[in-house]
Image (tube, rainbow, N blue to C red; front, side, top):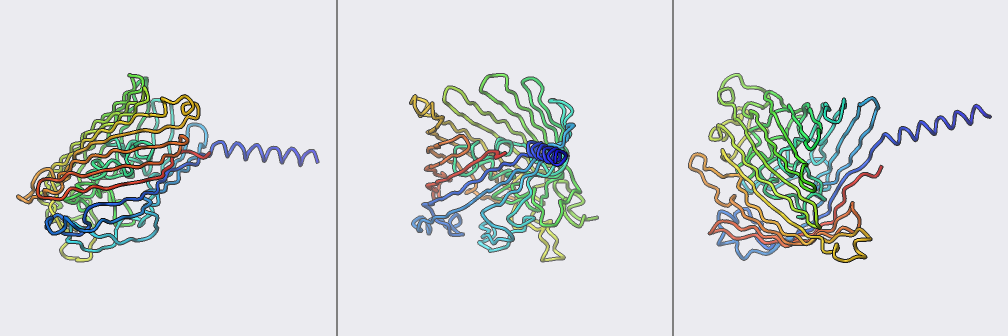
Length: 416
């Protein structure tokens, strides 16, 4: 009996040890929007005809994410992030406004379920870690801090979310670490696919693959450096460089894809300040795309069913700038401070344009957007936030502005 009890205790100790090495977490959000503007496909080409169109509403679950991690010991760890987008699995239909309202099935790999992270890491010291697998590319504020507790608005910051992949994830290798007041990260990843670039989203869909694998005929390099010297303040610089034309399947021996490389160069600066009951976040991103005028002509004309194709011109330049600030009014109430509840009143302003330069003298003036939002974030506990906001997009003269009310319930945290 003593040996059996010893064995049971050993088994329990092993189970507890294994559980202590396992980390489980995630984040998710449920949103509701009431949009006080037209959702007609020609609302930009014929704005006068749609200025009095009916309002429309929608419920959505943009992201529901599960984190799983495990510490094997001796510096070896594993991490994965599985995301369910828009509450579904499998293929989904979407209306492509930039393609005349054409309905088509999304060709994102995995349909509406994405494996955003899947990596093995070896840690040698705090300042030296190597991570290999499917990883997040931390270019811009949103990609480095994309959980819903890291922004005040109901939806992810619109400017970065328009021109850059969100969340940007690629397969590759990363070297990262922290030394003193600095954290750095350098990545070598699979290149973007220029065949997925669009006039209204720039490179937003460029990290997607319509095949069962990520094409890696071309590669990209991403870098990020954060500084924490000033208490409560983090300032980050990030960038990306890589070739995107010809990163298709099958690889072309001749033709335009063999002649042009489609250089993508992005520079970004961002900051977060948390002190004195304030949270302030800001970012500025600027991007350049080489050979942009060639992209419309590069799809595979021999196979009309090929998922690699273009229907519109793409800009050689894109930008997004934004700033938001929120003040915790509950910090002024002693009982609220003791309960650790927070109520932030916030405002946000941003300007962005995925089509900042005309290609082949083609203009899409409605892509130039200025946007403001005001609202509240209530946090009953540190892992949960309830959001409400009024927002409006201001478009160029001749187009109709786009006001909306948005609401959200979101969470983010680790459960074990």
